Amino acid sequence: MGANWKITLSYDGADYHGWQVQPGLVTIQGTLAQGIERITGETVLPQGSGRTDAGVHALAQVASFSLAAPIPPENLQRALNRTLPSAIRILSAETVPPEFHARHSARSKWYEYRIFRGELCPPWTARYAYALHWPLHMDALHAAAEVFLGEHDFSSFAAGDPDASERAAQESPENGNVNPVREGNVREIYASSWSLHGDMLLYRVHGNGFLHHMVRNLVGTMLDAGRGQLRPGDLPGILAARDRSAAGPTAPARGLFLMRVIY
Image (cartoon, rainbow, N blue to C red; front, side, top):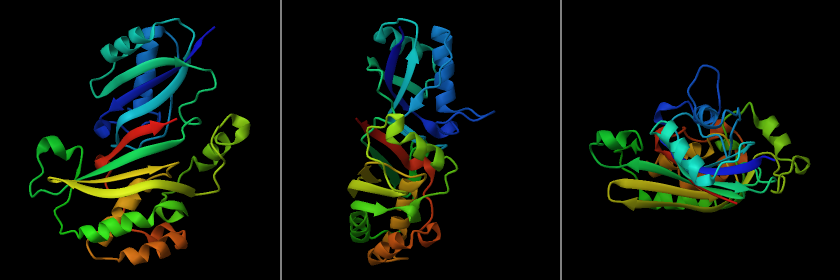
């Protein structure tokens, strides 16, 4: 009998074309699968809690997969960290019940977006933050962040996603999803706030699910509010429009981190 595995990993996504395997491109999922095969001889495709985009980072992504080979968790963790590139680290490895699935079993996620506010962004920070020296009104950013709390249709903040219909099928109860079925682009946001820590401005958001590019589109739109190009009072109308063209630009991928997945 094989075992169902859950691993938690962190990665620097700057040099990867996102999580999902793509022909001819280096991805986190593909690199992880190659590492598992080198160690066990088994071909698996680890399923992540979500598909981070090219250039997006993770402090605690979760992946699940099945292995036939018996191997102690600490040995698998150690072996993976030896064979994987230094940009990908396995924080923990454990066996879990057969019904656990990294994506389907997830209840909510925390994301963080980092903006460097200093005049000159250090080279060692530039890969992991959006350097933005424009004047910003913090009161407007705080007011804008509060608008997104609660349950809303976030169509105005979603990029076109060719995999949406596939994921909708995968999220159905018939496919073992423990989460309630969501209608279209409706998501619930539990926390949404900005904070300033020295030269680093952070946006943290916690929700039951996120659409393609949603966090980066929220950030780009709120920055427009912080610059005075729109008012926080305009945001309910942008949500109601359910039209991507009504919202602001997409913030760069390099500032986004998947912080935590809650099960």
